[in-house]
Image (cartoon, rainbow, N blue to C red; front, side, top):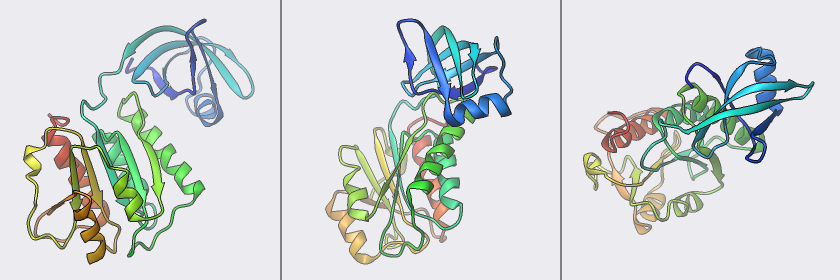
Length: 241
């Protein structure tokens, strides 16, 4: 299905094998990809399946496609990775969401913390989810990670309950409490914003079972740290091999 243009759709009717594309995905299909009646496309419903379809009908605000086959996508990660990143200034949060999606994360959380200077509103959150969908299509994934927002660090950390490994990247740590090369299960990763974390926030992470990890002796930009830690964990889990 790699040659077909890919679009996310809200739902597929299993009874008559049809799907209706609306909203931004329809506009993209019609005005950017120039699909016409008879065009073969690939539809994604977030279930992990990929549906080959043919455009059967075009209206002003939607298109109807007929499903001709389905298969399980082969590019989704085998092990769940959850990235929690402090809100970053400018468009750096978008960069992190884009690259994390390409690296195979299953879930993304953006949070505010004591030294965070950026903010997230509903429009920005909607934009971040759009970035995740576009990145998922570009790298041929079948699912786009949902991007969520947490107004404080405690809520963000508690959302990682149930993951086998919980890693907290922090400048207070001179060495890692966890061997990043030995990770073999679900992992939640926490990276702060440009201002880093306070001592109290670091203590909170420890009390909630997070292991401090170091990313070396150099001070990394927040977006670099988020992408680097995600890459290391993805490699350890076999996602980049």
